[in-house]
Length: 118
Image 1 (tube, one colour):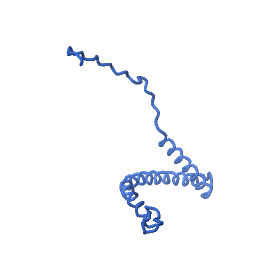
Image 2 (cartoon, rainbow, N blue to C red; image 1 turned 90 degrees about the horizontal axis):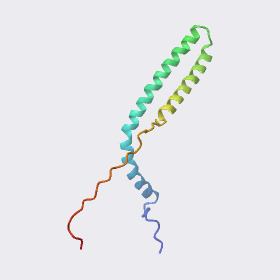
Image 3 (tube, helix red, strand yellow; image 1 turned 45 degrees about the vertical axis):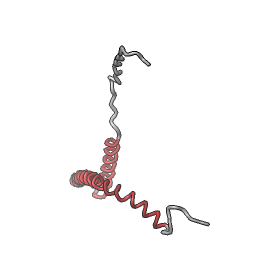
Image 4 (cartoon, rainbow, N blue to C red; image 1 turned 180 degrees about the vertical axis):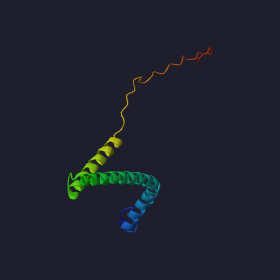
């Protein structure tokens, strides 16, 4: 007699997805506020970079250093490179050396009792 896999139990693939969502949905709900904070921080940083790049584009065009199209292309590449470098530098773990190292624990002297051993 064929019984099938215990994960399906007559519900087809829906049984598999049901158990997956039971696990995944609470995890996603817990992670959502953290992701929101990170997205806001990244968005603010990107907006600041775009404003600085735009100001530099206007400055380049005003001083006849390059055309608008060339200035936008150059400054966009520069801003993207700076953003990538900052992301790499912030994500790299800070390495600190512990010069003291581990301190050895002092051994406690054994308490001696005068009671005879049996």
